[in-house]
Amino acid sequence: MKLARFNDDRLGLVLGNELVDVTQVLTHLPRACYPFPRHDVFIEHLAFLRPFIEQLAGNSTRYRLEEVSLLSPVGNPGKVVAAPVNYKRHLEEVLAQREIHHGNLIQEIQKAGLFLKASSSVIGCGQAIELVHTDRRNDHEIELAVVIGSTCRRVLAQDALAHVAGYCIGLDITLRGPEERSLRKSPDTYTVLGPFLVSADELSDPSHLDFSLHVGPDLRQQANTSELILGVPELIAFASSFYTLHPGDVLLTGTPQGVGPIAAGDVLHARIDGIGAMSVRVSA
Ligand code: MN
Image (cartoon, rainbow, N blue to C red):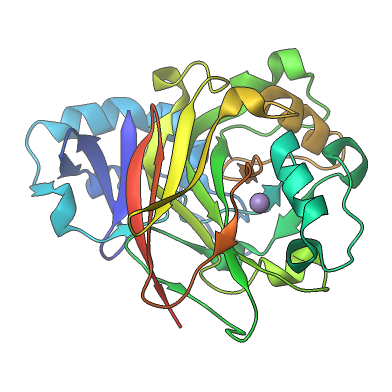
């Protein structure tokens, strides 16, 4: 199942090049009162909602995908966990270029660990990336994004994929400079998720996906998730050995070689096989 959020917080079921408005199923979600849950209640109840979504899909308003504005498929991610250097050839390019590493200590992921991006940085592909500090280099990073489906803590890698709700494309936009990663990667709009959530049953093996990123016509990044140092199960095990993962938490798995600068006016075209493709505008 492919699920999108669009326009003014509508929910859509994606069918080919179309989308069916199934927002009405959200009335089945439990009522929340203060203090509101910090995880994503829709993702938490996805399995429960699926039959209602399928039932409604037959006789509801349809749109062509290109006529809607896509929001982040996760409306309320509690945290965005990100892998810093999780492709060997990206590690090599970072170490080789001072304008990327800025004298920061760069280590392989087993030593560097993970970092967090502010959940307020998340947008969908229908929104624009708004660059800050444009006197400095801002880079694109395409990554496979994993959306956690159920609460897990200290999960073993062999059990980890059972806790995945689905996958989407992630763009980890990065201001280069000497500060902590979490600061440079957390400005508003610096985490793009999209185009929609592909449920885990549609993508049973995330470990062999070709993916690419173009800036305008120029191919910048091209790799396969088989080149990940820590794969999706290992990343979930690693992250959950430090903190509980909740439904709607997003795991950005790391970017491969080919990172490079973006500027206002650019359009990024990202695709991951088995998920889809999205284009995102860059403004200043
Ligand atoms: Mn990254």
